[in-house]
Image (tube, rainbow, N blue to C red):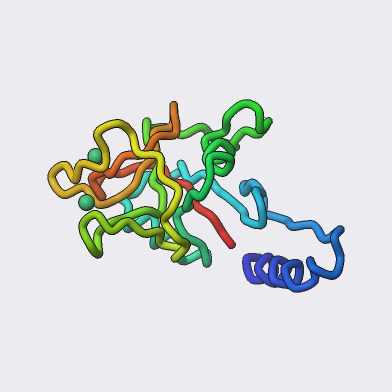
Length: 158
Ligand SMILES: [Ca+2]
Ligand SMILES: [Ca+2]
């Protein structure tokens, strides 16, 4: 199913510049935003690395954020008129940001540039060696978080 889905996406990408009417599709349980399919993973809370590994097995990554608009969509602000199939169970969600390679050198696991930032006040503080990025569900602000905590996560398939 996933292979067909990826084929579909690839096909769509390659013909988009020819046919403006080309539509992107996501598997059930995923929400389409831009050209990507997003999934809120709440069934099995995981530490950050396990969450990223879980995404990788589906040819995806933990989500990265590049604009206020993207963040608003992902945190489900009302004006976007979408609801995730399930609600997050915790107060924070794992995203793909980390500074585990170089302290203070933040990067996204999908390799996209780390430009837009929205750190919560006082963060990142590397509190007891925090290297993994979570977002607070209620306001969308970011925390450098303890990678070993088990949290819901936001996954994206490109
Ligand atoms: Ca750190
Ligand atoms: Ca922190």
